[in-house]
Image (cartoon, rainbow, N blue to C red; front, top):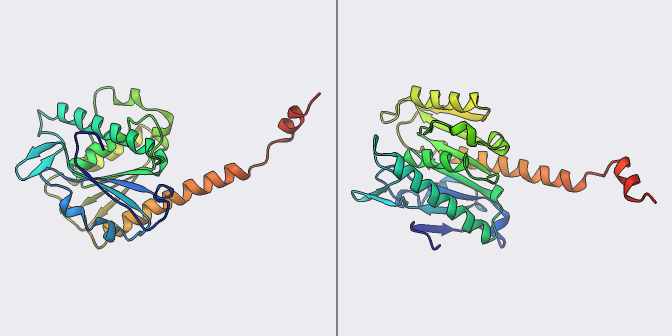
Length: 236
């Protein structure tokens, strides 16, 4: 990848990887891709593909997607633009946009939702774990019809001390009011990804979205044209 972002592609068990979901994995503040190297195994879907990412800004021994408030906006804008360009590169390499999913923890979840609700093509879905949402002043004006059909889920922990549960609930409600249907799951965890329960759940959720998409494509291919169309096509 030619962009200013470190990434590592982990391919699944398939001769044709682009036929299966590709999950972009965005870590949390001050972290890196390293703790997510076991994520593919935890997800439990051997045909899935993963792109592990390091955020563009250094923070201590790790990385961050943006600075803390009130200096957060420039970083959010840059990180969002980088991921958007990265997805364009992946599409050029053969991935369908609807095969691409965004998963993010904490800061990474915020960027995942930013990208998913701005990208001009439909994506497979977005997953935010222990996260919150950044709402710009006119954010709803930029929404396209496919953004309101975007498969989305947010998970949060009762014991999260970094991002209060109530804050995440209010953000989800705000998305819902804008017509974006966001599934919601509260778990017995803190500010983290629960590898035993949450990770396999995410895997099943993505598989469900992928199967829905495949079913829709299959129905579209087998749908017979109406009699009107048939008559018109052969009219003299």
